[in-house]
Image (cartoon, rainbow, N blue to C red):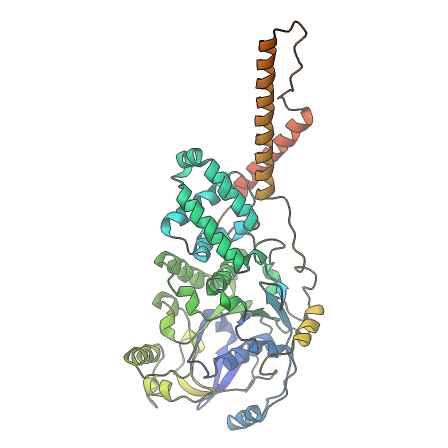
Length: 497
């Protein structure tokens, strides 16, 4: 049942596969809690990794970490393999890199404020349209003046600067109100309390580190520890959306390939679309549609297909539907919608089958020859080969200690950026004002006393040659930075654009 160009999912009346060459046509895994979605996700992740395709997946409950440990088949795994005629089933282990936004259960993942952009940051901060407009102005000012926004203190310093220059900036870019800036600052405080300051900064994530293979040619499975992160669902969903945006902006066009360059599993996908404005959904739809040509397959995992907007749902070709409950009218409608997304099978009613599926059983439809969806099959999902369930904390630490990215991200870098630049400007301005005040007082004293002595030597306000050279260099660098900044579909910064 294991073939080179396909991933074996399980058996209906025949073996059910995802063809690797259609792996970048995206997919959907749905079903009620406790019906087997996590095991199916593990089966798919193992299959792609074994085929040499790197995988990125969020680990909501910690269970997915078991792929990093050699399996030891339990009775239900052996029995299921026998039931579906999977004679090739064996225990296995897969290469894993653990990641964690908070740096506790994996290597830290960071990005900069500038790279995330105003659109995603506005969603993260839950800003209204007016506040988002002010944030966009702040970002435009930073881009124009070459101010690097690396972390939260950079953004706070920028907002203070915008408020102090509100009259000038309102004339150049549009109205900036004190109330909107105050609201953004309060939202930043909430974000900081959620632990997001760990996420913003450097060294930023290099997408290439998500696309590694080991010496045997197996794809690394990058696992994001998300159990703590799920306490801040908006941070979780915005982070994954940023990652999807980064993949789209950074990877080159590759066209059709024999297999994907990366498969990205977006668990609890409904969080991405909850309360999302239409403008954002339209951009997500655009990114999902276009990222396929970069060789990236996106697989959404959620309870029900109705959690996904139709414009996105229509692009998800490889589908696995576990059982759904249908007790209320709303649930019954959801089952009908789910059934309508499959190519019918005359052997059974898809709608009835969705409510009758057992644990580990699912309806499967994937693209087959010429990219046509297969007829839906009532499928018993194959057992995973690696450990099912979480590994121990000490096992996780041992894997991290031998990680191929060990030491690359563990120490934060705080280089010269907007906070330092604006702090120097504020200090220089204060010193200039104090110097001017001192000179004014000296002039008044000289005029009052009518002294015949030589006038007191005033402090020169002229720059020294060294100061002039440094300021000229700073302006040149700022201008170059401003000219180089290019933003993508979701407003994220294109590196080296």
